[in-house]
Image (cartoon, rainbow, N blue to C red; front, side, top):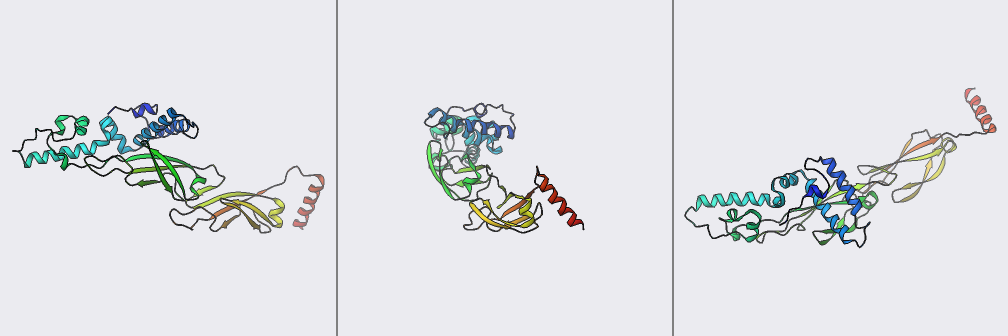
Length: 296
């Protein structure tokens, strides 16, 4: 098994911080993303390498294993378990001869022949390694449940992304990891979501927040206006004498709740009253008359 230097893949040193790893990954992922490099097999290969490197180095546990075991990091736990089992068997069956090379060629190639002596293949079944991947989405992509296809370890995996998934959330796809050892079960696939927001709405929990401008006359006299929500436009009545900074709530016009079909947060709209500028002489006179009326 050839050694892959994940630090070199991301252009980093071994003492790189978590933020440096994240920044380097996002920069390279954008550069080599398949959508930006259609029909470019080299870019696709590089993109897979970048994702693999990030999946390992961004996880503190996996990074520690990688730093300790190098190319064998995925099998660190198997190594320790098998070594412990070998010790127990030697203690309970000291008269048995374990010189027959009972371990599989796989473990001999991974850890050396000295390690493989002492435990029979039929007694050692290990779950395959878990895979980690990051999926980048825009906030609009998470408003509705939809399907995506990911390519993991050369295999296309079709998955359903539930509406309302959050930035940083991790979901597990059972049995989509690496192949098990000696008939052991497959590992799992863990997908971390990285969600950017290109919309004018601010998301907090499942509530959305936006700001709507009103001119002075709409605020004073009231009006019926049309505003944007996340899934379309709605009409909204503005009460007369609305003050700057007034907030109104549109129930159920927020973001969908994760795995709770038909349930949504609310949309909170804040009014921003615009003061007119570049007044004409006639307009100034009218405002002066209004000021006198208010003072009397």
